[in-house]
Length: 193
Image (cartoon, rainbow, N blue to C red):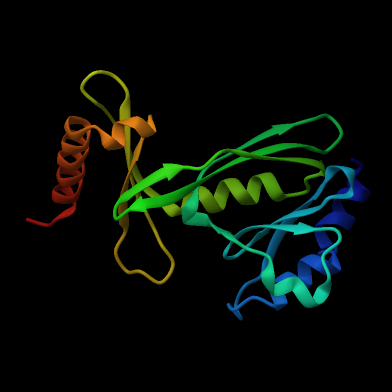
């Protein structure tokens, strides 16, 4: 991509469907931060102040309010693999709360982009900003658990969650007890005094 193309892209307005989705948001403060054009004319992957949105190319503008958002603190992983032509593939793994304080990884979603623009850097920065602390602990019998403290918009306190490496460990009483103890240790370490 030439310097002129980069400058044009940097100061360009988002595509109309992307703007329409953000304008239809329940959050009047939501703004488009970056977007990438998906391959085969499928639409756009857009980073907003609230999270990631997949905006289909065939979106009817009166349905813009129906486009969901994966909020930044719900992104477990976002991996970018660039190609030499300005595009690449984003692999995004969402986290879903399966019980209070316990999250599970959703199946990874892959988005092939023909033009990524600033999207990879913005996604990286936004996801990193939500993670306050992260600790991996081994579990008996193998495997492990990830303890993560995240900033959640609208909450003063950070939110600690547990993510098991293997979903089967969530039903193992011994693994759950170890994870609970590790989480209590992490919470206690945050308490003053």
